[in-house]
Length: 137
Image 1 (tube, rainbow, N blue to C red):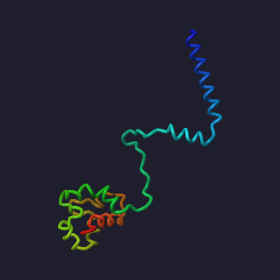
Image 2 (tube, helix red, strand yellow):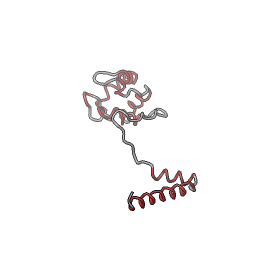
Image 3 (cartoon, rainbow, N blue to C red):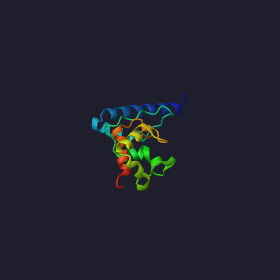
Image 4 (cartoon, rainbow, N blue to C red):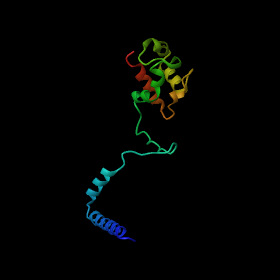
């Protein structure tokens, strides 16, 4: 081992031991603050290995369900879907009654899949989404 390698080894050892002695004197509060400052800002996952999202803590409101699942078709009228807020589109459907609207939304009708593809939505959440779409008509 030449002189420069010995110096680097000694320097590395000195830094390691000095850091360890400083870390031993850190209070739990300081340790937590340091951990918070140096935590990663994000995570990287391989496709298919993403963590499973937490289960909802309660029912979602109609606006949230609409924004997540319904807006893709009902904002533009894809495949004849009644557009949100368009009284002319909704009038014949509303005339059939809210029970029929709920049945079609929950079980699927024409091009609309059951529950609008929201397989984890409750029936009440689907009804809330319908009410959101027809509010103010």
